[in-house]
Length: 96
Image 1 (spheres, rainbow, N blue to C red):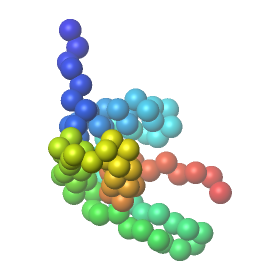
Image 2 (image 1 turned 30 degrees about the vertical axis):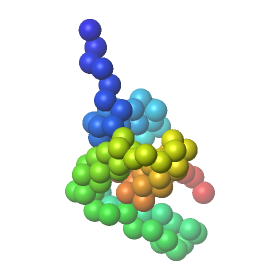
Image 3 (image 1 turned 90 degrees about the vertical axis):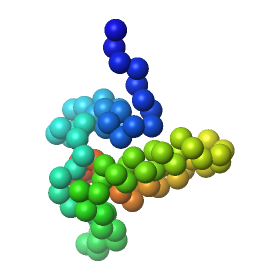
Image 4 (image 1 turned 120 degrees about the vertical axis):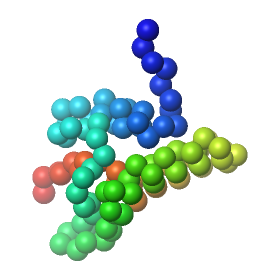
């Protein structure tokens, strides 16, 4: 019997991302190990926190989602924002 997924664990979040991004990025089920940022043209507009912080930051916001009494839609928006801010996964580089 397969293990029951734990939707609020960083490990299962990585596994889900790995399934979603299979064939799109190399090693998609792993936290990033290098710096990450967001460019707008030639300008750097966001530098993500160091990769060493990703596991704890992901677990922190997943714990918040699990325990929060806010509406699911609000929790989904916060989850997405935090994911984009932390950028815990390996990057997908899009062609220009």
